[in-house]
Image (cartoon, rainbow, N blue to C red; front, side):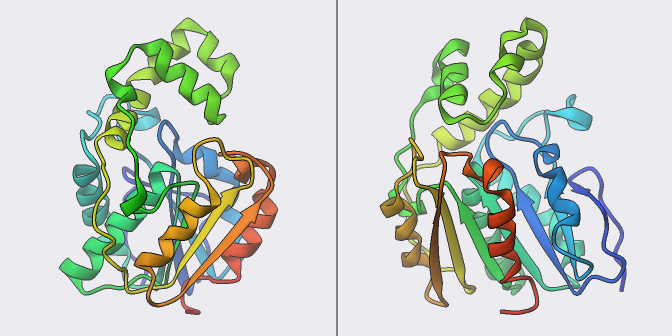
Length: 250
């Protein structure tokens, strides 16, 4: 059955005609759905790709940003309910990995729905998190961190008008990340597949390996060349890895 499409919360790039499953992509702090535009047609006709569109940016610029991981996870969970008619797989990068984990837990505990798989990228396991209160510092500190991780074009942040436009969403996301502390390693009911760049300045291979503690249904770790945003240069390799475990083929 074809469900209605909530374009407020999700972007659908290159919709599959007759999908057998869905991949829900959750972007990083300061990121947007457009970052994953090329993923929309990369998984073939069997998989429909939805990318989360967070409040406070692009078409949702006038909407207030959520103030906590719990609030954002609750809203994403509610928004995804109409899309549970097909098998669902998650991919989350950086902040999005924690968000994907929290949404997976909510779907299982509140709605008895278990995703096919949870793909987590460049983010410490929930019980290994060491939050930094960057959101309490000035704009320059936030910009320096974004540049260190490589998530946004530095030239864009050098433009005062663009910087003023994007900084509120960046600060809101860093507030979510900075207040989401270590928590018990509550297991998910699906396999977990972790990915990290071998030169990531913020997340080690050991940090990613700790996701095994929430993955009694199976775990794998893939290390790829690159830093925190290895997935830009290694997009084809990462998509191939995720494609080998699509929704509906657990």
